[in-house]
Amino acid sequence: MVRVFIYIHFKLYRQGGDALEQNWIISNLEAAFDTWNLRLKELSELLLMSPEEFRGGSIWKIIKSVFDAMKGIGLSLMVLFFVIGILRSCTDFSELKRPERSIRLLLRFVLTKAILTYGMDLVLMTFRFFTGVGSKLMGNGLINDAMFASVPEKIKTAVEGLNILESVPVWAVTLLGSIFITVISFVMILTVYGRFFRIYLYTAFSPIALSPLAGEGMERSSYGFLRNFMGVMLEGALLILSFIIYSRFISSSGTYEEGMDLSLYVWKYLGETVFSMLVLLGSVKASDRLSREIFGG
Image (tube, rainbow, N blue to C red):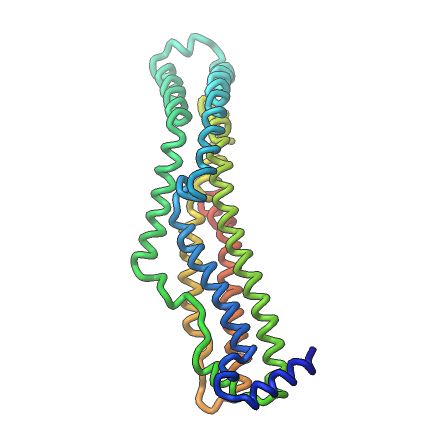
């Protein structure tokens, strides 16, 4: 394989001009960066997209039908938990004659009923709130075209200045780097898609998870559910913040110092670029855990 590459590379050098512009090293990098930038653009759009708009809203329609079915079960469980809560908290039924006690139990029941009945609207309201936080970050110009990777002209000049022996290891590294960049981009897109599916699952089964709110002394599991659900919502804003951190890293990559060997500069650029992408990947993967920790989950 190396012999074939050396032969083709030698032919390219003999042809000169236009052939040099099709150098395999530059082509590998540009193809990898195109995939990376396409995934970043898709992620930026997904993070500000409502569950109603995702995939044309077809998934959301299914979730709404599941939610309606679960709501009937949740209301039944709510009554059961309400009765169990009274039996656990009241040692004597005469306590229910006290106005403050009766009113507190009644308010708990009514509030739980309202949450289960208008749960879908509350989900969308919460989602819009956290999406607004992300939009505010983007609107302040913290995310711009600087986050998209491209091959600097200095790199193209440096690669074209390499001889055959120097270009072989650089070509191998760029090939591995291209594969690595492609894998990272798909891991990130899967993470964001996974967030949408978690939102759907949380929404669909929220009536059952929130029904214990009606029972006094039994609401702990519902509070845990709410903390985790809010964490999933907040995750979108944390992902946008991860993009901001990445854009600062990528903007400082590939700094050329006067007198630096061109071959060394290519290696330095590739290393810093891949490191910046790893920083973004690490931030994306950690956003789930961090969002739950913020809400004490």
